Length: 340
Image 1 (cartoon, one colour):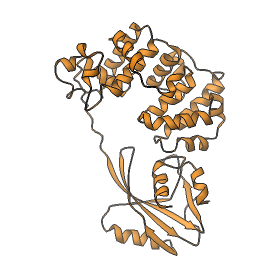
Image 2: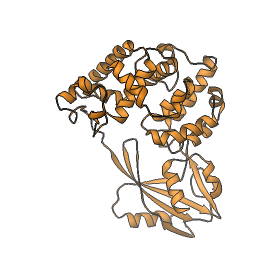
Image 3: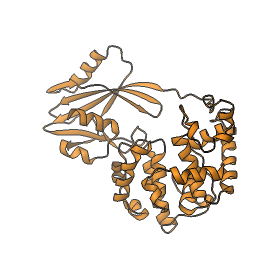
């Protein structure tokens, strides 16, 4: 498996900007961005981020708001905050360098077992394992692992296999990337391209015609439905923004004040009462938006209210032309781009 997969990767790997370097900082940034985000989405963010923060030191010294602004739209903003904290830790505690021992690198904020394995193997070519969702899928099919992959037992199995295989490799940086690339391009979730797979002949799921049944999961994420009103206050070309608190969604980002409706019943009447409670000169309901965030499905109703005075929220007025310079969520950016 190890040799065949590595040879396949050398011939077939995608040309991606983070594969053009062995710099651990650049690799770290890419791996954090790629968590739960598609490659095509990450590439422009990665390039802009490294242009703004070309080194650990430059990221460590940057204000958090600037970091979040460059991250805006990628989602899962705790990744950006942890990356920022991790850079500060590396600069202040480790003389601006990455440790090359798993136990030490795991002390860095924002670096967990997978990211540690990625940095150590890809940047330093060390025989360190890594397991992500792609690797779990490849291993579950290859070894015919039919138990739920999100169980503690399964996690131990996959990490054990990852460690055994990377220790057999002469080029761990290539082998680990090959595992992830295979899961991303060939051994996909719904339509695996088994005819193009370099390890097909030894794959248990392929041999037993189980590729559609493996992997299995034991847990299904339940989403809570939330009905949210975004209050877009305008006064003489200025728009009112508030900064989300640490306990709120999109913490640290600028946002329009929000109000949650207890149910969608009689929403027309509720919306009218809510709008009129702010004594607007004029108001209108904008097109509704759908958005998903941390196990919640949001139905968002934006209200544009022209007002004469400051609304009863903490925040500040911002010129419309300056809003683009604030770090905001993808939802706020989408509402703004569509209507203003």
